[in-house]
Image 1: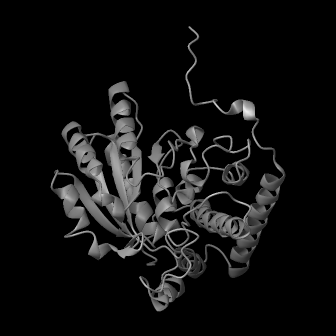
Image 2: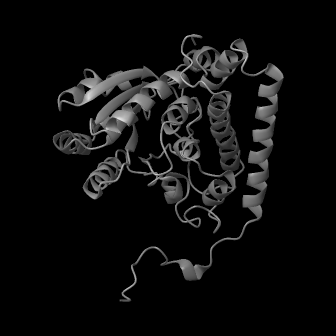
Image 3: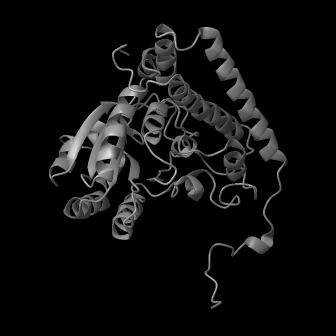
Length: 331
């Protein structure tokens, strides 16, 4: 990363971005172990490798700004302000979770921090995000909504319906396409014809492509687009070029048939967003190598303590089976 690109002038801002990326990686490492040890029900989809996307964008947002997430949504949740204990409780089905253990990995929602929820349906949150932006505009609020989705979701017709609406009504929404190179088990260039950004261009929506492994580049672009969206210049579309280190889900172990191991090794060695940002922080004398080690160890311990807490936490009562499912008829 270039020394000329000090997009955040404050040391604390840089370190917060670094810490947030490390927190996402630590959460995912522990979530993977919970699955492998058969302690977590169901599947989960690892966000490891894509941390700069969630952090770079969410650092440009306020707590009142909204996001919608995906089945690969732990990173978005952490970056928007979620706590480890509540997240691990949710993964383990405990009542202390953000959805009282009923949402699990793919349906975490954290309304207090503006996270309207993850969504197990590919592209399922696109309408929710656009609706949130419409609501903000109609109510005269200053909120901006970011809709996270993967490259595979560009095959969903809903995206084109909502982009048309957003463009017609100049809604304060940013469509953030995390292009990690694969749609489940198929290379993106085998399922997405043409340019992904051209899909937004067709609706007159300003589009951008950015290196999703460079947290400063992501944050600089996001900061600019969020500010412009608040002024009524939206919507916007961003394609973030990134990479997932794990398979499509935690059970996708033997994936040589669709993705070569040397490709994975290359990204992990030379394109890791956390390692490269850490090196940049060192070269700019913002932090020392020992301080980085200290941050990593501190967060690792925090994550492990949160897992232990969640494992001992109580399950929700069976009396809660219809809680949050039906609205009360009381006047």
